[in-house]
Amino acid sequence: MIKTELEIFTMAKITMDTYQARYEKAKKKREERFRNLNANYKPGSPLFLEERNKITPDFEAEIAKARNDLMSEFEDSLMKLRAVETAKVAAISNETKTMMSVLDCLETKTVSVDEYKVLAEHYGGKSYWIDRLLERVADKCGIMDSMVQPPLSVKLEILQTLEQNVREYIDGYDGENKCFPVTSSDKYIYKMEESYTNSYSNVRLDSREQAKRMISKALNEGSSLDRSFVLANMLRTSTPDIQDEMLSILAEKDPAALHDPTMQFTGVKNVVDRFIKTDGELVKAASVAMEKADNAKSHQERIGILWDNFDNRHLRKKIEERIAATNDEKLRDSYANMKEIKEEQKQESRANKGE
Image 1 (cartoon, rainbow, N blue to C red):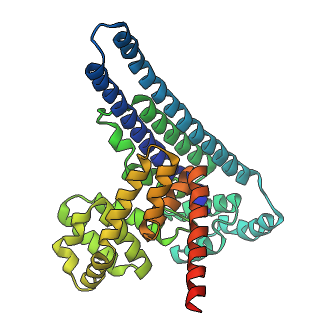
Image 2 (cartoon, rainbow, N blue to C red):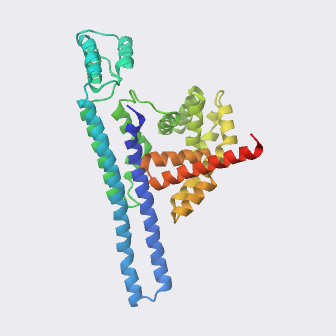
Image 3 (cartoon, one colour):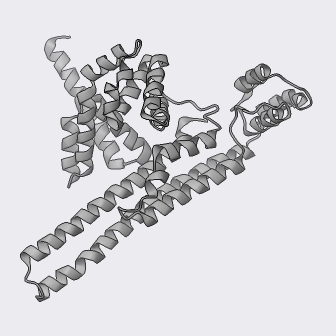
């Protein structure tokens, strides 16, 4: 499985978050219009009544459009993913037939966990039907983790549940319902993603994607002490690139955790201190810039905000993630244009220096 096949889960989260943001923005606009109505119109006058009678329908129309646009885009992506997963079942290449003829004999044999692990690492993820064969071998030998992707029926059921959750959120969110934060949380989405992939079997994730899931798992540990120890252990045992991604995500989601006493442990302190010194403020600035860009009143204003903060690598990551998840064409084109101009500026600067 390639990472892009998992982006439906990221898209589900962003769809819900985006709807929430658009709902709150429309709600504020409605409240502002009511304030202006009371301040600038004579109560009971024809103009007052005309304006008053427009406010709520306009709000409802804006919300309905947001709901329809976001859900349509999400359902379109779901349909494409279902087609991809279904096509895997129908694809039986000569290579698959050859591998199955070699592995068929294993269905009557008993293999050890270590032997099975070697087989799964070598053959797993190569073909839907090879995965099903390995799954049967694991079941016969009492091996609990098949280390391969689940069957189509399981995946389609998970996608149906995901679609239902997103639809219920968008249909029911009103700014006050307390149930929705659970179904829209990282923990809930990642749990579904984990089931969809059988604990990420044969999935290749880059360092940032790995870090996101590690941070989500750590922050959902029972007590604050448990969370602190899990985070410290993850940092101590991770590679430098994953450490950097973990700390940047942590600085955004739970900055106080960076100053927890457990972050003073050997093998952790130097990493955390260096990050706080070099990147702590950049993460904050990236979040502020992205929020301003989301609330910009025009496309030009948004581009200006992003341009002013373009040298912030954490902001660039946010932009790239947004483009990957939402396929925002305007943002994608603007981002590509900004990168091109920045590169031209660098080349011009080098030329002026005689490099």
